[in-house]
Length: 226
Ligand SMILES: Nc1ncnc2c1ncn2[C@@H]1O[C@H](COP(=O)(O)OP(=O)(O)OP(=O)(O)O)[C@@H](O)[C@H]1O
Image 1: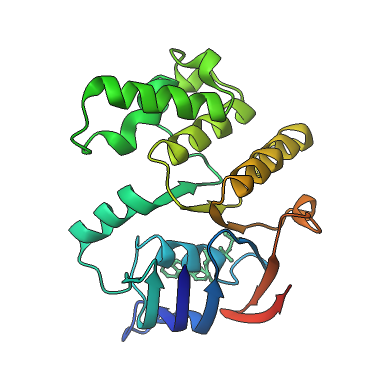
Image 2: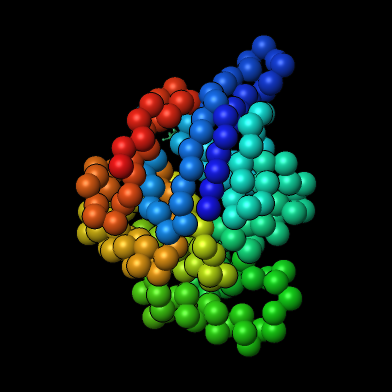
């Protein structure tokens, strides 16, 4: 599903403040695998996720997702690739606070060209999967942290992506909500989704549905434990 070959990322390349955030990283992730990316703050986890999501491009190396070379996609194609294949859940949820839950959830479908009734049905289904449909009409700014996270999950799932990327998804959740989030990941794993979760959270250690913990240090993968 994902092949990452000798990927390096240098920020501010060629300038005095050039910084090498990823150093020749190689990783293969099979379809349906759940991978934990671990490592201290600054080790390169978010940078790697953003390259897989084609939100940024590597300085060198290749990233192939589902047979498509995404490391060189022009921006327009990169957003089409995300809209079709990727769901992303961020630490800070990245929701539009003044809009309702349902309005946030349909954002990824705005340019899909699908009829409104279809979009509303897809949003309904996704909000049900994420257990947030009872708050559909409520503004996001009045939700609790756990509810915001469930709204973010509903938005990430609305277009039924095969690949789900999570960046520190439980950093702003209490233990009970973190455990609920993990249950949801397990359900998505059962649906055959491929998932990569960057986290420091010890709750993710030794989960039965996780196939590997990939440990990063200083821009490199130092351990790839099955
Ligand atoms: N746009 C940028 N310009 C310059 N340096 C950057 C940029 N983005 C990230 N970096 C640097 O790259 C390194 C890796 O950052 P990254 O966000 O990938 O780490 P991380 O492992 O995800 O950390 P955290 O757990 O804190 O999110 C850090 O030292 C960071 O300061």
